[in-house]
Image (cartoon, rainbow, N blue to C red; front, side, top):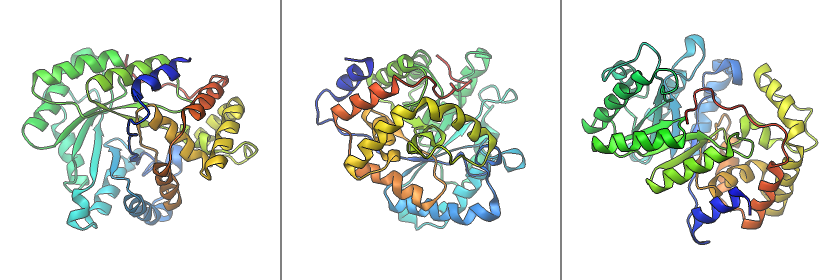
Length: 338
């Protein structure tokens, strides 16, 4: 039995453990460098994508104050704010909007996030339920983190936001921060981490999931499709993304992941499903909530289709065996702490 098998057995406890849901991310909204965002071409389609996601039952949306390149910084939040404002009040109340605040060097102390928080809430037109620390500064500026966390905790205690989350933390840092927040009387709602069939750092991921489960913290899996690599059928490798950053990644990962993608494709056919759904349901089987990025209504429909079925234990084992054969993995996030 592999470590992944052992983890899934522990996670499930029995075969009746419910699977997590699925949310969606908005990193691409406003990002020209990686995703080729064009406002004239994309904004109307993104509005339709948002509406389709909600109508398909995806009720958690993740963004960040740093999403958007250059002068478009904050564009993701702006678009979300516009789209959410168009919803009926009842539908707005059913949606969880989570943003991340970046601990830039000029943001420090208990008041370090105050201006950023208010700017995000303004762009989101007041629709903000969860605020998250985008990454830990423990590796390079440990003095900065404590004050910022105290400030985030105060936002919850004062009722300015309902929930608090973290991102890009390992199990050790998560346990420390969780305890620190509990001392302030604040519960930690979620932690984000890169999680996919091509994600690096299996051991740390498994430990993080275990630590989170023991503390009743939801694990949000970002990049669950490895920038789209895991949706590419075997034999379709000649179709490359438009931006050079993603093309470079595809050229490195597609050959290395051929066997994995072949197994994914076979499982998808067996279920009358898609490779995207296979990738997302593997994340759900791990006990995480995947938050894939969405840019088109068809992508929203495809992602929501994963909620209609699940992988068997044997299918997870086939995928785990195939992923072990991959000679290359996704790059680790440089801001990830231990």
